[in-house]
Amino acid sequence: MTVIVESKKMKLTQAIRIFAENQAEKLKKLEKGVSQVRIYLESVAHKKSDTYSNIVTYCVSIPGKNLVVKKHAVDMYTAIVDATEGAVRKLRKANEKRMTMKRKAYSPT
Image 1 (cartoon, rainbow, N blue to C red):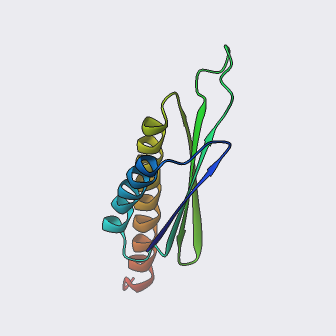
Image 2: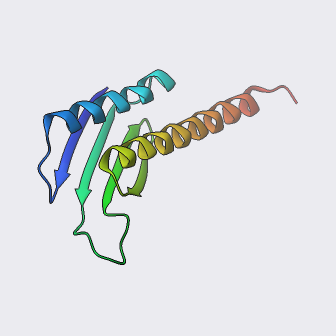
């Protein structure tokens, strides 16, 4: 599994990159078929009306499907954790759906 961390409109520090890669390792434990994880980090100009100024987008490539999760938060680290939890949840649902379809295909009825 390859993890690619990219930033948009912000400087990507080594600490944020390592934190994002460590969070992405949680996806590896869940399913063996994950081939690539792309993490896009974006910091939007802070406005009075916009309290959520950091955006994290996960693009997870599994065979036959691409999962995209987008989360907003005030802090970049919180946004990364929230996006990771969302990606884990979505990946688990896709895996369970695939297993259910396999069971239905092989059930003798």
